[in-house]
Length: 206
Image 1 (cartoon, rainbow, N blue to C red):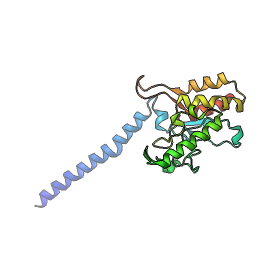
Image 2 (image 1 turned 60 degrees about the horizontal axis):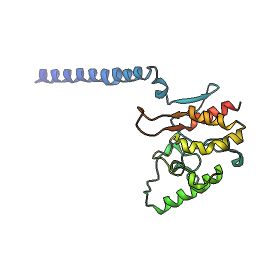
Image 3 (image 1 turned 90 degrees about the vertical axis):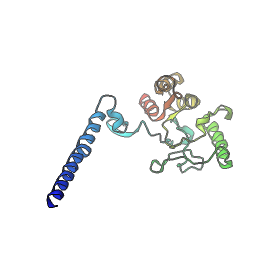
Image 4 (image 1 turned 180 degrees about the vertical axis):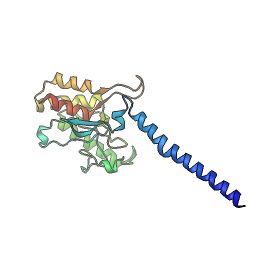
């Protein structure tokens, strides 16, 4: 009986040691090594954006910038967020509680917020409310989407050019340079990366 228990305990101990080695050392190390491959390392580290060697954000997290003077707003803006302090969802989101509003398409509150957002954005950009695209007035599921549609970026180009003093064609070219195409060429829609675009505009005005 004692011999059987000893053999079973020894087998259990060997399995414990092997699984600890495989799952506690080999597997994590393998994942870490894969993350070091060219093209993956930046994503594995959070796709950090830097300016003069200092981290200033992530290309995967869209935080709506706030201008010191709303009348002279030099930034491209992201989609609204359900976690923003502003009742309309315009402004910085809270990344610690990212998420959607969970309001459906028939919600009177959501429809009213969309109409107010449309009016506010049309006033900010100096355009007719009819040309404000849907992604400008509807929040993403996470509330932290870094991408906007080329249409939303396009209506912001004149304001950004006017405030920064850059020529409109140059600003439009920067938008094009920071527009991601469809995945695999046919999935999804093109999107403009707002954090990267704002840094490019800032660099161009230096």
